[in-house]
Length: 105
Image 1 (cartoon, rainbow, N blue to C red):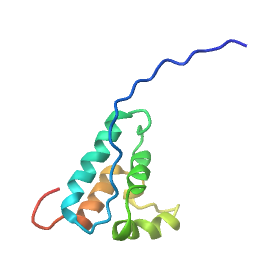
Image 2 (image 1 turned 120 degrees about the horizontal axis):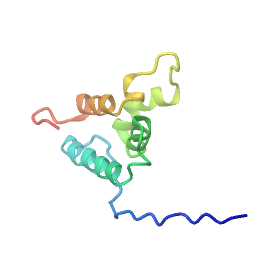
Image 3 (image 1 turned 90 degrees about the vertical axis):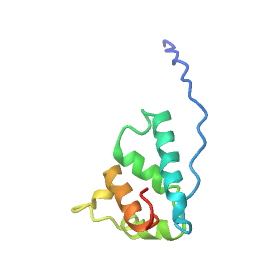
Image 4 (image 1 turned 120 degrees about the vertical axis):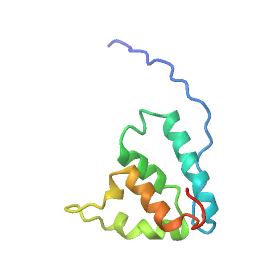
């Protein structure tokens, strides 16, 4: 049996995203930036929109998570909502429901 050495993969140390619970809408922009930094750091891990959406949802809590929870727990596989497979649509959903009204996020 031949040993196939794996190349040394070097990653930068990017801080994991803080959770976002929507209690402070001003934190949404920083949350989205933090997600994007993680995606940029691990391109192979986040090659699909679905992987990005799942990762982002794992950092939601409180009201923000409650907004998505019914469709996470009981997805309609015949008619998925756009945010379930499109990261852009997921961000639109976050911004529509949780961004501050006076600033663009």
